Image (tube, rainbow, N blue to C red; front, side):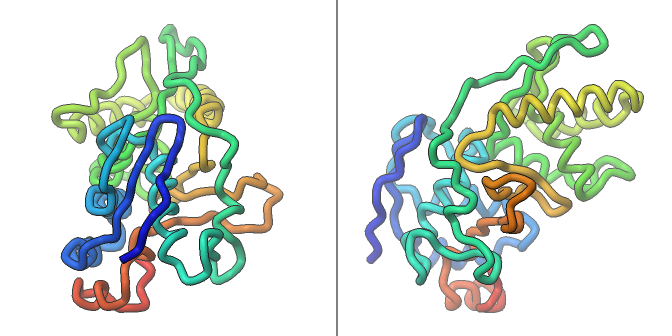
Amino acid sequence: MINFPVLRTKRLTVRMKELAMLDAIALAAIPDHLNEEATTAFLRASIDSIQGVESPEDWTVQERTMAVCHYMASVMDDGPDFSLANGEARFSDYLVGDQDYPDDLVEIGDIEGDRWQVRHLTGAMAGSIERLHGEIPNVSGYAHWRIGRMAAQLVPNGKAVPIGGDIDAAMIERMNVIARYPESVFTRLIAAFEQGRQALDHLFIMEADEHGLIALPKGGSAAEEPPARFPVGACITGLAKHLGGKSAVSGA
């Protein structure tokens, strides 16, 4: 049995445990494109106790990534600073360890008569964006994730998308509103959003591509390392993947 060090961040104290084989098989059966669903399932199965924010769905996507990496650091063959991208990078190239959770909200000013703020992206929000892919005509891939993040994180006049209840219905309504803004308004809004969300960066610099969330190397645009994902499939054995119906060499 593997013993894990206690994970401590500004908002969380987490004790993790080794996955049961039953949970590992269930994780392996989750389709590859449902990264956020798999992360939530993994965290629920691998957490022994939490002090602080109780639900992993209420954690920021950075905190969720930190917990996945904490587990990986204990189970990967090459140790705590495990390698990524076929040896091109290491975990430490992405961890912004001296930058933890900042304020809950960032003010980004007035646009078209509305007062706008930006909040953190949580697991619940990211999961909703993932599930809603393809629901807006002619919006997919990178555009879907960008508009989805704007819908989830932007708070106009104090009216955030509610996390409880039917979050998907609320998200799709807000995404449709944002996608139908005139280009000039959308351009101003996305520029302010990008500035605001960067002010909320902590632990990792999170971005999104056409497939979902990614972590950028902390060296910025001049860094040689590629963007990275930390799939929970890397935390389970080849046997669990085989029993879950996937190739044992699959990383997801």
